[in-house]
Image (cartoon, rainbow, N blue to C red; front, side, top):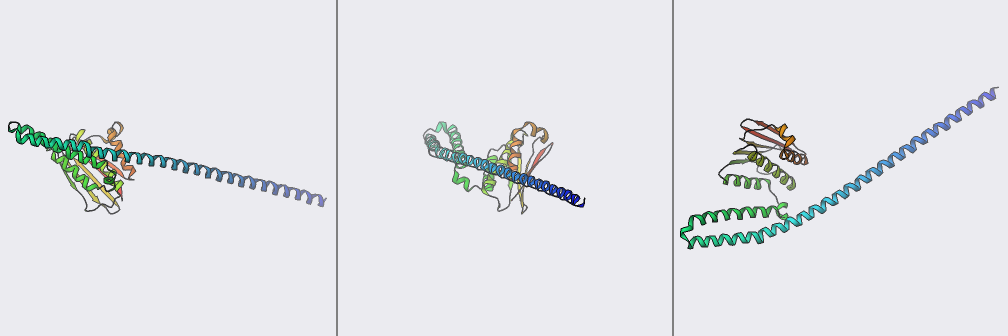
Length: 256
């Protein structure tokens, strides 16, 4: 009787051990399968990322070639034509005194067109992009705004910006968009741009004297604010609009 009981206990223990081993085996197999699936997903994501990176690289290279070509065409062809026209206008101005006032205006307009064309030509040149300076180009933008005599703009900035060239270019486009929005939609005539170096970040304030707007409403219907938000997010920054009757301040903060 005792021997039968011991045999039954042995069978129960053996069966329990067998099922326990089976359970452990199933868990181990499941873990191996899960790890393999995770590895496959990661490899697939990595391949897709590489593929997208190669496409982006190819697009950028193609864009650089196109922009470089446009830059040379603007400088070598259109720029030369405008310069020749300016020379002929100047010659006519000296030989036709009765039309002096009209020709002087034409000469002045051609001079502005040539300067604008040179600036545009530079902006398409990849060598110029590689040496892009936010402060220098913002100052040029301020000078152009003030030269119109319709608007007044100012710029305050630190002596040096510790920000990569590509980020400086993105930030420049953001500030440009803010100024264009203020001119077009807020009917602003006065602009103050202030850049503060906070050591670990940059704070940018773009103030205008426009009519103000509702940022929430504009963000739903306006592409300008959407573009600004997208570009600021690329820089891992934050942007706020503080608007009231009589002016708007765009506050941007980005890490450096």
